[in-house]
Image (cartoon, one colour):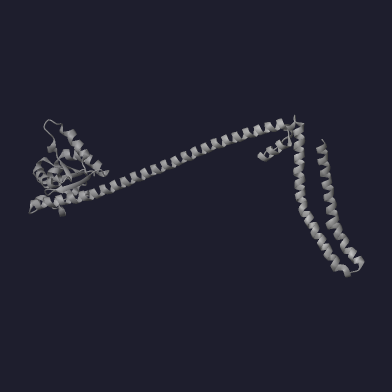
Length: 332
């Protein structure tokens, strides 16, 4: 588990209030040893080190700015003209929190910066006015601790939101990757299926062409029937038989045979109806036996002519024509 980084405390004070600085730093030591805070003051600048770049760098990296407010603080031009400008920019952007600590009585309520935030100690009573200075600093440290707890909660929430965003992005990326793999796999299957179908179609076409070549060589009824049974979807064209008259006669004969079969199948229902009408006629003959002869003739003759004689004659003539055509093709 990653150890949380301590909050950087940057203390701004006037030189005349250095005694208050030492007292505050001593009371912050327990929090510093608990790795809750990291205190930095200009006293951390080593001899020979350029103090202004170091101060600006630490100010830039700080999380909480502690202002030791007093009349000396307000009298410092450097604090207000240099340090506070950077602090205000970062404070307004939410990158740093600012805590004024009233160390001695002063007119801090007239300052727009200090009066805009919650000050310490409690009830805005200056540290120097407390009967017990130690109690005043304890109150200040507790206020700082409360602010750190709020900041820690905020940091935890942000970290949790960040983790949730990362998790959602990771899930979305995995889902997109999964869908992409599925699409690629489907396309690969379709490609392989297409190749397989093309290969099968090519093989089938090669077999058909070989069978067709065999049919052209043999030109027999058996070869023709085998070809038609094997490749029922083949549509014959007259130009295919241009140089094969014997195969042309076989094809015409087979076509006529198919049509004769279809006609016979169509005639089967007709003969059934013919038998039915004959039975009806027999029943009429029994039922109408007591009627006068002229009435019988008037009822039965139209029936016979319409339902028996005429359909029979028409179908007989059609079958005769087909048989004549069949015989003619056979002789050819």
